[in-house]
Length: 192
Image (tube, rainbow, N blue to C red):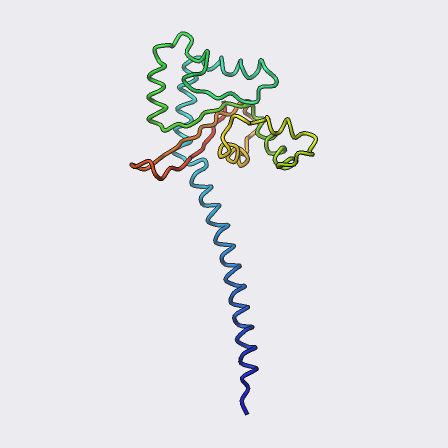
């Protein structure tokens, strides 16, 4: 007497167990892969040094104008800093082209300076009001970083600021291969 029915059921059970274990393995792998991508593109040591050097460069210019701009206006959450920023080159006009060249050589895409408590506000906003228009704080949350790129906002959500700093200097770098076809964005921050 043949027992083909039992072999068929046994094969189905084995396939289900194998498939579920492969799904668990795949989900673990994608989680690890995403964490590794974040580790590579966020706060890499070489980019932290670049950001620190940029902050020092701006400190040697008229960086107090940026801080004054942030502290004078309560409604201003952050300032985008670059060679077009008014007041940064007061008394240092001859340095504008040098700084432009340096930003180009460092592959800087965007620099922002923000109050450290605004990073926490961003995290709270995304937890409370993530595309929920009925949220009571939606307008404030929506306007909080409307000039920052979406990838910059994603980076800022991962930043853990120590309470000893008052301002945060954040830089976004875009590095492309020779044909400008494969570009990656790197982020880092330093305290001011």
